[in-house]
Image (tube, rainbow, N blue to C red; front, side, top):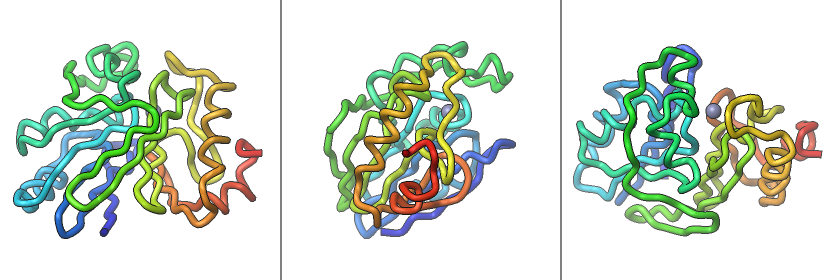
Length: 203
Ligand SMILES: [Zn+2]
């Protein structure tokens, strides 16, 4: 399994392009870009999916167009799904992002497991940054959205955010094996062991 990151938009959202022999997955296409579309179209013979960690404008802004250009379905945590069509809650209005309301095709709940081609994923519900953010665990790779960053955690001052809830979610992630690689929604990659030792929000 190969994991590529591209940085999208002014606030540099990490958009992940994951490929294997039988699968191609895009996580958090936050802004319109030709690269994820090209990636999915080049892998048209494989099983494909677009995954969203949470419904904030900088993680969802390119998703609907990407689906139109590729025919690939969009999955998101069930509790964040309604926010895709609410520009107040997804912050599109606040940041003048112009994200048109849209709906996802697949809704995930905590603990759900699914496979794209030969890549297994497990859904971990991690509310606190938004009401229904989810992280995606694939083997020893965790796509942690805006829940857990290298040395930090997501903001809790946006609609649906709550600090105590977020810290509980972070503690849940920290129980994963130390060698789990963490691919956050912004900033550098890290590991669970590194965060256990250095991230004061995980203590
Ligand atoms: Zn966010």
